[in-house]
Length: 290
Image (cartoon, rainbow, N blue to C red; front, side, top):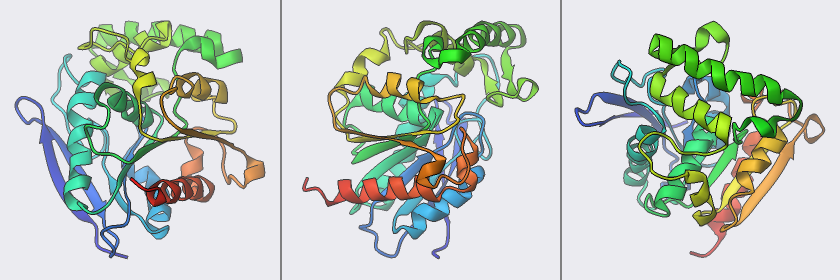
């Protein structure tokens, strides 16, 4: 196993948002490089077994915490840190680390939940600007309350409670509510607006980004998971079916497929089946002529 390299990245007008990007290079530096982005409120270290599996499958892996999580720091305050900053500042800075470190390799982004949402929205806004070869998303769906079936009332109520608490406190104390972890106000106000309306129109954008998803041209792998209350299959399909301008590979993974643990987060503790699907898809994409 190769040594882990650490790269510090800073973004923002005062360079006051800091990321520690961890790179695990394969000996063959032309092997595909996978940039992994976690879910909201989840430290990157939670996915160590998944990252190990991708590395053992033959891929270089680049991992970082999302803004304000784990080793990633962000300025305190009510402003900033929403979808706009993550899409326009954070993601291109992190993927640039992979491109610079592996100039001979195709670079793919692999995102879980919010990490996947941000990856797709970045591609919707900026096309092939980041030089990616594809995007794989895991348990990534719309947060629109109408897509949650029997849980619609629960999600709808949450979409009103979250902004009320956030505006009162100036932040989201997710550790109190068991959802999302500690988050800046800007992120949760953007998230709850989408959850209420179905529109992806975060502060800083003058149009619904969901309308741009049809323009995504990068190939996409979308995995939904059994017994996932936060990204049920219906919610995943509602988001992914907007990607009408590209080739999308979808799979719904269940215990019958060998999934060791089901649910939105537990899969990462026994990630073999998810890792196999991602690795196989990346191999297929990398083998295609440019």
